[in-house]
Length: 172
Image 1 (cartoon, helix red, strand yellow):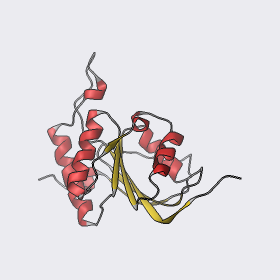
Image 2 (cartoon, one colour):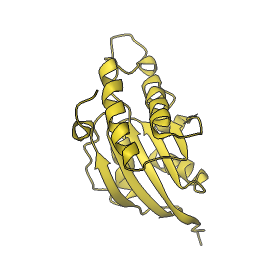
Image 3 (cartoon, rainbow, N blue to C red):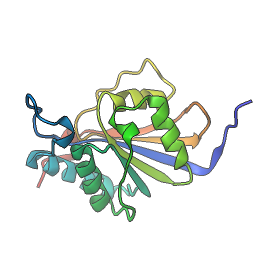
Image 4 (cartoon, helix red, strand yellow):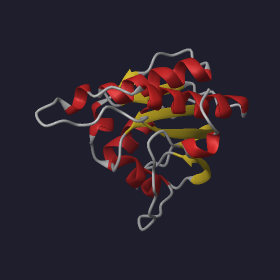
């Protein structure tokens, strides 16, 4: 019988897709693509809005790709996260089950922010909500909040909200 560990308190998982990045060029290193100035501005506007709503992750996990690391660092600064972002290869295209296993390692945290990519993040939303047929249009720089109460082998979370940069208003 599987062990269904549960948290002492629910955990909020924030999924933040990286902001607008430099275009992929022929022969260029995709992993080295950085955020553009526009991408940074839009991320800052979105993060300012959610900070005002009380979003403050305890930990941040990020894909090791440059654009995701930069997104995670911006999020950490803007949201007042004391812990430095931790890089994990599973957010660079690992299986959804592997991402869930990584989340479970951090189940003692009250909130966890993951910075990563598509199509992994739209698939991860569907998986965390136990809704495999769900289609999510996960825009660059969008942020999703999912609440988890149990950390067993299969997740069953509750969608709290999703915010896209366009709704955060014009960047300063």
